[in-house]
Image (cartoon, rainbow, N blue to C red):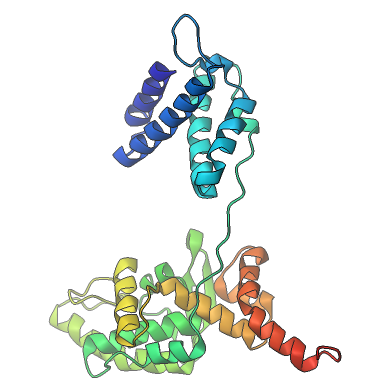
Length: 306
């Protein structure tokens, strides 16, 4: 098996142009699988003294995953199984093996962590932290207000350009996953923050001789479009400034947007449309973070709650 693993890794490197990180991960996962089978002793080729791939069946792969189950996360188990599947698939395609024994082994069901979100008072504190007397403080306030007001993804935010905000109608046109366009409402507070920031942005672009009809909505000091990583740094900067001593991503503002709407009685289908979720099951994750609100409603309205 050792020689076949090396042949498979060479295929990934030369024909698939796999990264060094990917090659290292595949090599480690397959070597760990080989060591497990070798220690079991039931899959050894007596002539070569190595593990024989022809002797490996789906039961051996399941036994390996069971062995790992106690000390590994399900995401790690899924990655290791994917490496084994790819390994066997390559040699089935090459005609060395008749079937792929890993194909019928079920991928461990992944945990779905509950979305992180900020309470309303912490959101308000965060939004009021930037110093809007400066150009970049005004920009940062507009970024935070837009993320929370619209619930858009950070990738959608940095993709915004002039013309994507309709100030008269109070709507925002965004391009989500797969470049699917959708229109979302934007609140007056966010529009006010944008009105304060955009003239300052235009002055920066004019000094840099970079004006344009479709200029990025949110720019860096060089006049270029902000990246998602830059927005993450902006969010974390103000999280620390307002005294919230924990790591918060831009996505937490999206989660807060959805959770606060749900707590206030918004329809789950409506929230699905606003978030741009294809499946309602994705949006339903937010029902789990609103248990306290549900209990409050139950205690207040059910005749036999108390």
